Amino acid sequence: MESNIETPGAEKKRAEHPFRIAVIRGLAVVSPPLLTIVIFFWIGGTVNQYVLRPCTDGLRYVLVWQLADVREDVPKSQVALRPEEVADPSQCYYETPDEKYVPLLVYDRVRRDRGTEPLPQTAKGVYQRYVELKYLQPYKVLPAFLAIFILILYLLGKFMAARIGRLLVDTFERGVHQLPLVRSVYSSVKQVSDFLFTFREIEYTRVIAVEYPRMGIWSLGFVTGESMDDIAAAANEPVLSVLMPTSPMAVTGYTINVKKSEVLDLNITVDQACQFIISCGVVCPPRQLSEALRAKAIAEEKSQ
Picture 1 (cartoon, rainbow, N blue to C red):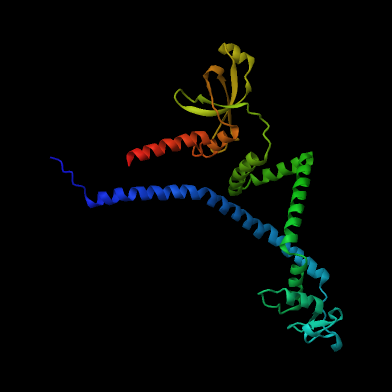
Picture 2: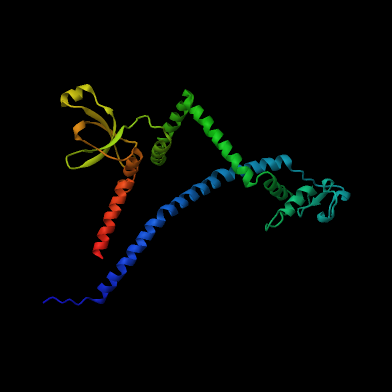
């Protein structure tokens, strides 16, 4: 005779089951926006650290070199011991802790707008801070940087359209492919960038599913057009040219010829099919995903 007495461990496990499901559902809701924000912050931090900050430092160095009016000695009548009491600071200088003199207007600007930062202890430091306050403020630097960056991209794109530009890039890529470790990383990154930023040269008319490489296994494909007349004549029916993309790079694949009667048209867009292929089947089109989630929710309700 079987006993119907449940152990305490089984009751605890069953009680924790809904809690665990709720936590996982919450994590599924939070993860996409959180990861999106983290990725954008990572991109912004990388650009700021390796592009924007070096450019700003170089520009600050040039401006300080051009504008700095640092003197070793000035008449005592032009030295301002108390900057706040000087009526006309345009003709006065201030002595910095390193025993050099900078214009009082420069020092006064740094003193007034220093915020919580301590005053620089050198004349060069005073001018560096002065240049940052007057010329390199973020609301000035960021628009200028974006404008220059877009201009560089435009000129680079026009240069690439010329034959010599393409020749130089091909030469560079051949050199990269000679490096054992770098070529693997570069090839992967180039495939992703080509997929994201290169205009498609092949127009896909629709997305289909075909039983390939054998019956019972369905693969996604992109119809590129009608196949050759000789193949259609041999098949005694219309034949389609189909590009069969491979995961995880939808831009790579191979072309097959399939009878029109053997293809299954799918009610999804090319972009949705690419997401499905790139994610190796994890990211389903919204309609199929909503139906799958509804069926999963119904199954979970029945099990509780």
